[in-house]
Amino acid sequence: MSITGKCAIITGSNSGIGLGVAEELAKLGANVVLNSFSDRPEDHALAEKIANEHKVRAVYVKADMSKGDECRELISKANDAMGSVDILVNNAGIQHVAPIDEFPAEKWDQIIAINLSSAFHTTAAALPLMRKQGWGRVVNIASAHGLTASPYKSAYVSAKHGIVGMTKTVALETAEEPITANAICPGYVLTPLVEAQIPDTMKQYNMDRDTVIREVLLERQPSKKFATVEQLGGTVAFLCSSAAEQITGTTISVDGGWTAL
Ligand code: NAD
Image 1 (cartoon, protein in one colour):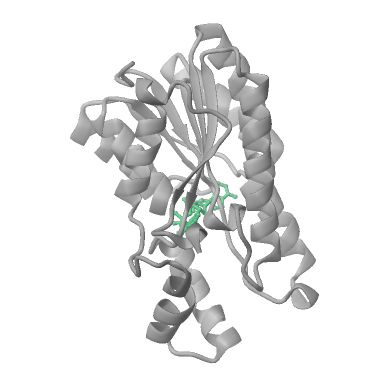
Image 2 (cartoon, rainbow, N blue to C red):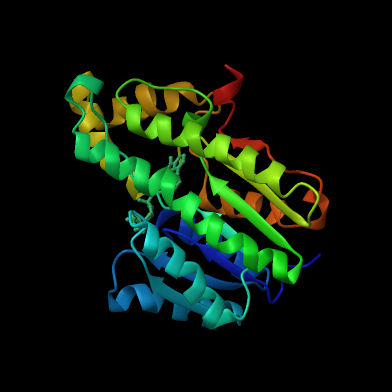
């Protein structure tokens, strides 16, 4: 099964992994729906660039993934724009690093909303459309932190473990249908999300930037290399290929050996 002409929605895709996934899927001929909470000319320009480069249709839809109704509207707007919803990549995510007794309650709520509840809303809205056309792929970008923990990341680790659980549930609910649901668990990828947590981690551990990268971030990644957005895009593409038809309800780690430790 080729993904040419299929509609892929990627939440949180104006930077980092989401943008990388959108580019890889467009390269294979999918029409893509980019998303974030902003509505700047440069957001729409990203969609135009992908459309021109890969000769596919691409649109940018503003929707705040911390709000359930906007998550659901993203799916209906994508369906209106592209005529179907075939591939849903739940990728939007944020991070905050602090000990649990100092962790701001509003940050906890925001992380659970964006990193976990958004995928509940988008999946609930997308499944009926996938069922109607008889094919669908849900790919959740979880994390190595969906399988293991680190200190100072209580909300993130909880949300990522939660999305792994939700992935399994969706897979069971769609098991007899031509729909699969899987989670990808990346180790560290050098995106703006990781860049942003380096200063706080420097403070927590009293280290300079290079030492944080070597001894905190990549300490748990035995390959000692960051994973790349292209590798993650390729993994999503594999999960959308016919080779992956019987892969559902599981996790694929792209973490340089982190979870083998
Ligand atoms: P990033 O900061 O580059 O991208 C996050 C994306 O989410 C951005 O496009 C941002 O605009 C969007 N976003 C944030 N809040 C949003 C909201 N309220 N509504 C809509 N969009 C919103 O970070 P990234 O590293 O590319 O992260 C993407 C996903 O990959 C996240 O779920 C993250 O947890 C996961 N992940 C990242 C790494 C890593 O090392 N970078 C590792 C494992 C998992």
